[in-house]
Image (tube, rainbow, N blue to C red; front, side, top):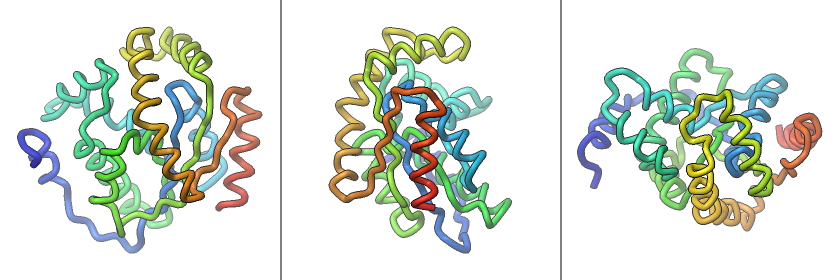
Length: 215
């Protein structure tokens, strides 16, 4: 049962009826695998809108008057996964608002989601029949490279979770919770794996090949 601020947040979600289902590509990989960088390049070259689950949560966390901002803050600082009700509500709202403004913008890259079994079950419960998952774009990168990239990013990003202690927790969370989700989609033949340890342009060459083929 959902109680407290989560309940209030879920109840506030507007009922909006769209002409067609959003077409979704889940973008997964460890922290620092380059998901955000590659999503930006996909948006430049294809008709997709990039939605970062992490960015939406950070925006809500810092939004004045947010009922769940402090709750999100506590989860992020601990390197834990935010309750699914919050994340899905923010994603659903962002997709609906985008499609209301422009009916041709119905393709979405959802970056950093689903991150665990709870996320996946929550997505199925809320979005089944309301959004179509085309495939999972998986950026495969070693833990050492991911940590090195995040520490470098942390020098200028201002993100409180780009530090060694939080990163080690985030890597463990990713290995324990997110990798099994990727493996599940692999069994369904819905994962497109990219070697993300290389330079940005080399990685995007492979990404481009996937989108040229998949649409």
